Length: 359
Ligand SMILES: Cc1ncc(COP(=O)(O)O)c(C=O)c1O
Image (cartoon, rainbow, N blue to C red; front, side, top):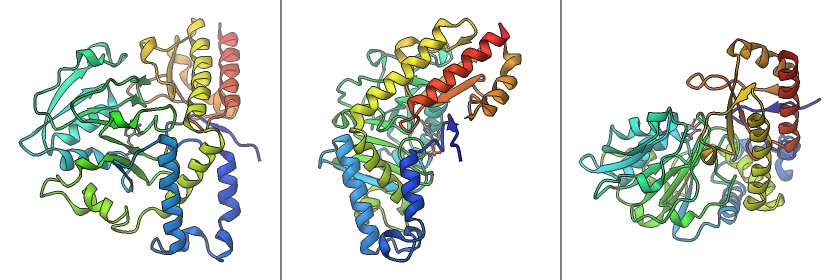
């Protein structure tokens, strides 16, 4: 069986070595005669899996003891409510940087639980750039400032966050573990797992301990970070299988040399694709060069009538899920950690041939 290249934004491609290991262990995990899906989350076997996953995640991101790490239900979206519920108040204010689709999702949810100030927005130029940190107009006494360092749909990236007096909250769903980040600059980093961590169904949060214990009284138990921490992310039955696979991905990342090596590889893959797009008159990426995502690369064809042909033929060539989000149109190649360089080469070859045949 030949595996195809999945350029989808999520659930995303996973390392083949991890899938093979999972297949091998599926019916009988480590000789216990059961699948890992069939054992109690409270069993010593699963607790060991969970602890090891947390420890490897901490190693990969160099997370200090002043942070708690949680594995949660509900992906990134549920945390859009958890964040204001846990860190702000009904009468308080939280600041947001509006950089497109996912930032807006966070903003709209937060408005139900706190006042929101938009400290900066790139809507004036159709979200094709990331507002410079020096231009952020942060409100006094804000509870936190929320950023989306990788806008998965728009293909925008924010890097080099400067130290801030205000607690920074970051939705790292689509860039976690793809580049080295200094966790200490953030108060809360969160996201869904289904891009660089593992199967959908799992979310993660890395939270500065000093922020715990301040939830609004209406906060449901399952949405309370302190409660989830006290129960070691097991207040109820967690998504055990997704957690187990995440642990395997963390081990795989370590075997690949960790996040710094992944960052080098990701930069190389992204550079190849952007260079090809930039030298062509047939394809275009509209994002300000210095703000381009290295995970999600949207591109337009100069003749939109060819979009469906492009998608059909790329699918036939084994290059899947290249359709761009409807709000942006065109195409999008998501090239997360597990997308091998060969996948990017195959895409570029296909794009070159497609262009030649139509020019
Ligand atoms: C940046 C970002 N935030 C939030 C989400 C929503 O994630 P989830 O589906 O895990 O709630 C996504 C999903 O693609 C995303 O890319």
